[in-house]
Picture 1 (tube, rainbow, N blue to C red):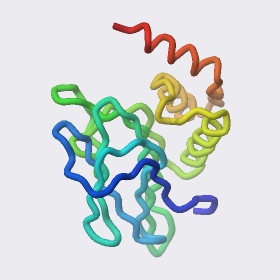
Picture 2: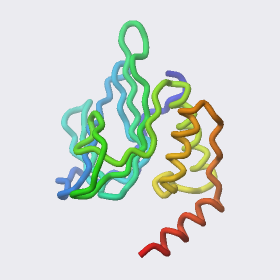
Picture 3: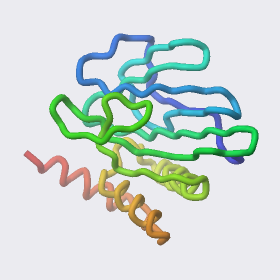
Picture 4: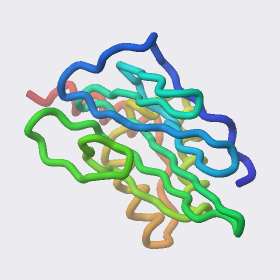
Length: 172
């Protein structure tokens, strides 16, 4: 698993009790065995269970990237990234391991080469000065569909981002 930095979480606050309708994500970090982390997202709560496990909370309608990697004596057994929109009370959702209750799955990619492509796409979005949390959900769906089909995805541009922000502002 070369090229992976230690987990990065921005905006972490002191341990708090999550409000109702919070999407909870259980993270585990046992180096070179189980490495689950949040690549991006704005958490609203954090509970440290022990030195290897914690639970992060995300507000309804916020977006986060959840990376899971696990290995055994014979090598990698899972390499996956999910980009998820946290849902509010009563909204439909898909279930995901370690995510309660689940979320609106915008992207689901398995296999290290494709996961690495998604991480590179996230890095490219950050390089143009856009926080991946604020990216159009349609871009994450596009990235999922193109990588699943073995095609080259379009890069996210500042013009595309501005158009998304204007559209979002115009919605009732």
